[in-house]
Image 1 (tube, rainbow, N blue to C red):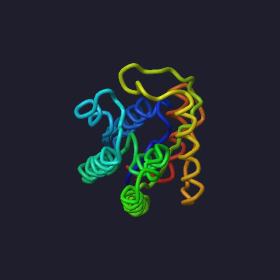
Image 2 (tube, rainbow, N blue to C red):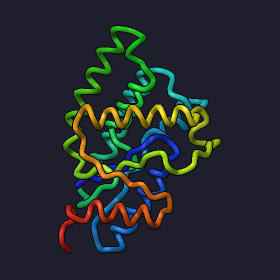
Image 3 (tube, helix red, strand yellow):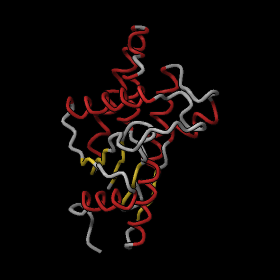
Length: 191
């Protein structure tokens, strides 16, 4: 089973992903974490840390897919992102306006996104309730307005594609972990 934690940048996805994966392992589940592919891609190939064309987004999308599939032997995989989050970011950046070719590529990304969507057993959504703090390493180009805009695109995607999700509203990590465990309790296999 795959659980994905999604939200705009700087909402605490990585911290919650690590905490949830650790909690599941402590409870005896064969669980592992898929880290967000975009961070490694940006630090390896792009300086400053800003994707500037659609090819970057396609590479990030494919890399995320591969990471998730690499752990398919685990009983529970907790993802610190998702392919549909990358697709949503692509829409936010408005690459489609640049050319007919880009519109065709985005159409293919949407097709692949919708094909991947059922593979996520549970979607945990983190709204931007954690106070925004610019992180000089990871998100040098994301402003508070970008974070709000990305969140709006993500929520619009949920609505448009009828994505069922559990909203994690707490700001404290312990409470977020408790809300997450409650949100997945009905899908956890018996030990």
